[in-house]
Length: 544
Image (cartoon, rainbow, N blue to C red; front, top):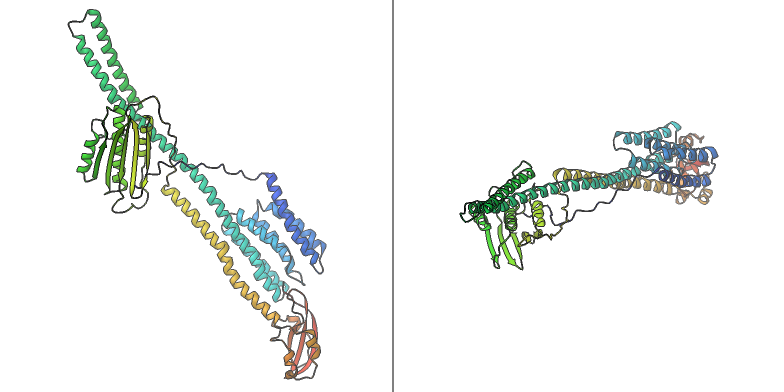
């Protein structure tokens, strides 16, 4: 009885879902995104060393103008277009980086939010990365280009897509939750209405039992009066007419109640008003339920419908106590005061603790609420600190004034809804991990590599003044203090194949510590420990 479906709570009001963006709104969003990405591209074009107006500005802006709106229907094609713009940077012999990595990240994010998660997006991302690496290999690019292709471009492809699919799952969870809540609310309203209709049918049957009994007594008295020798013939005819009318009223009442029934006998054969509350509790006690009855006030002459409602409150509360809290102690209190009868049934918590899972049913209290409301009473149910309580306040006599109870029960969480919501939450959590934890793990891998590369480039810088102080013919020990910690570890094949004195070993040093600029490379060639040649090789690689 500790889980009765929350009868006292009102159903949550559902906000109307926001309509999908219209064509005009979509066009404005696409135009705003194009302006942002075009601004980034123009900024990169402005600071480029030797830009091409057609390849570095006009063509990318036209591609973005087509790719951004096209990604609404073909998100994968938009990602390919953005990756193609980044490939222009890989084809650049001076610098692999360009401002369209931001466009690639934006289009990849849109693919994550719009495309269905599956093999196709993964194939798109893998194909783009394969194309970038193949382009570096075909063009014979240096280490900096490879570093750009295996760090910046994968981050622009992977991280926004993971964030996008997380956003897609989150939106699906929210919209699916609203749809599920609406469905459950409609189902709960239908179940509650069915319970109310059945309860009204029971009330009609109770009316037949009580009113039919009274009418039958009237017909019987009329039949006895008809045989009285003191009546005149006219009086006897009038009494016979009265008896006939009462008999017809009883028949009509029986027919009406029969039509109201739905073909199922929902009443408890032991739940008629013939049995009193005391007899009901004695029978429950005999079956092993610890039950206690307390009466307060003078017992008035209750209406038969009210008396049966009192019986139904106690009966339904006992049923729920044995169903939801087996082994609990039940206390019944019936108080009469001021023309009203208050019935309170309280059960303690189950000694075995709460039952696992959800208990099916929970329709009895809905029907009971309808019965109490129809008689002008109020029903209150709710948990206690240790148990559950059902309280009904009923008038002793039914009047035309009734209490309109419009409280709706919240949707009951069923197995299907629980499973669907659980699956959606798990999907969101997994995509949250993929969107944030996986990139963090990737960053922990890439950042140390980037830091190590920066350390290598920074510790192989030979300053021009130190280079000028080094002279051919000196022993290495004479100028060792002028040399950096290490030589440049990534000279290109062209540098290695440059003419050198025969039989010498050459070392390469960067002439500038700026990682973002093109720098000249100093080459020192040694024969043993003696410096035999030094020269400058221009156009060394730079870090994007």
